[in-house]
Image (cartoon, rainbow, N blue to C red):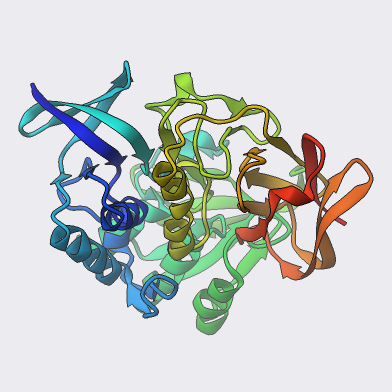
Length: 407
């Protein structure tokens, strides 16, 4: 067994958030080590060949692979040890264990940052009746097959869900000469960023059907057709069922944070089913942070990277545990989810990240103690796909509980 100790910060996950936090922590003089389960670091960036990355961090419009290369070059230049092909197998007695190509590695560290990203919801998470033919992929896996392996995944494509990866893949497949029949979204509003609706669908004349879902698939060996229905606000089928020829169905129906390795030890907020963290993303496990999409799904990679600096602030101040006597943040009207759930009163500032349940126009975001509004921000337009961020001074809150809502 290989034992590593005298480590200030161990980062689990060598995607954009893990690499970014690693290099920033090293610049502050911390002894850092990074682990990743894949052969090459970069996470999902490696297959995202479109631009739109690095605008906030590098002030450049980079592709995913370019951003990954920039981050790794900085990490390498700082002589940060990076262990690839290393799978985290357990967290016990304040120690982490990894299966790796050099054997089992035991790590004892002052702090741990889990930046494992998220996995896609697949057909097993959905209620789609019918056969079990080939030709049904998650949008991210289709992106890997297309962009990394250079494979043609089908001829006539249908996409369920209007998440950003699905929108981007609709454009990508159309450019490659495939027929994209349409995107079917069960909600009455789109799930991706507005810019992707314009650049990926409207510019390429790909139809988007809101309040529609796939209820059945059919095919002996390969997918042959799908059956689509319009739904009401309660997701009940209405109108006639449409039969659409398609040999490929992509699922772009959301992401699930990768926290399985810690799940049994984490405390969860019952209202949002998210792990409870403070403003530094510190969990109820002393010295353990959840970062990026492992904590909540960010809409932009740059925003997820920069958010990790909240944890670095706590590490530099020597904070290891949540103060459970802090201010409790609760969800209110039109708020879908948010972080943090606890804001410590002795902090100079706190960043609050949240998503709304439906498109919002010309309303206000507020923080209120009972009937007293302590913070207010005008909202011109906000969509469920966007992660919004506000910064507050905890001194504006007098009581031990505050509600975040839209009015």
